[in-house]
Image (cartoon, rainbow, N blue to C red; front, side):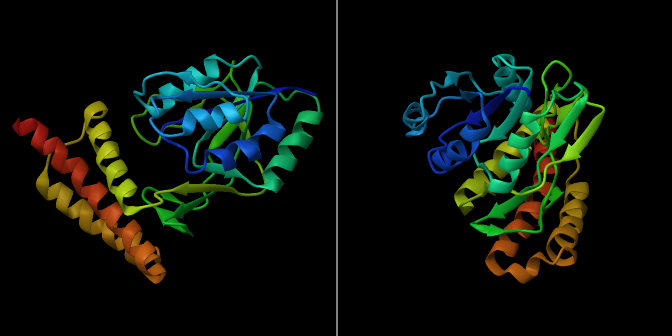
Length: 250
């Protein structure tokens, strides 16, 4: 039997945080919440569950997760964002896993994560398909999050297994949030990664993304939600090149 520290990142997360914590606490021997400066009811919700959040200014997602991991008392950690809700099958599997002997330190477990946009399940959301399978349960002395500016991931483990069940990743609950994150993600990508500045490349990339992520993926069948995900992919593909071009001109 081994103990598990659960690590959660928050920032103005009042919309889903109670549901996230209610699902997590049965599998957690310790719950660590790292908050990057919430101004809503997030911190009060944490206190209602007996948790005092740790403040740390946000730089990149992977770095913020590593801060949370560094505060863990136990070797094994489960890392989640505040818009990811475990279902009963996932929790039951983790509880059974904890009852056994401690696994090899170089082993990790992947969640089965189903993406939701505007309240509906989607098959794709640039640049991933749904479900995807991020590694989120691992030994913190062996694995950690890398420093990629976007789409970071856990590295350092040698073997992995998929946890059955489903994790509801309830992202982009409004168009306002979608476009805010689109702007933030593309700015961060251009800031920390070398992108070839080219308007023509941006235009061709946007056209290709429209066909791939809206038409060929079948997103057009989902009406307004499919249109939103198709537009997100198209704009993301164009903006990363446009912002690189604009930065070079400045």
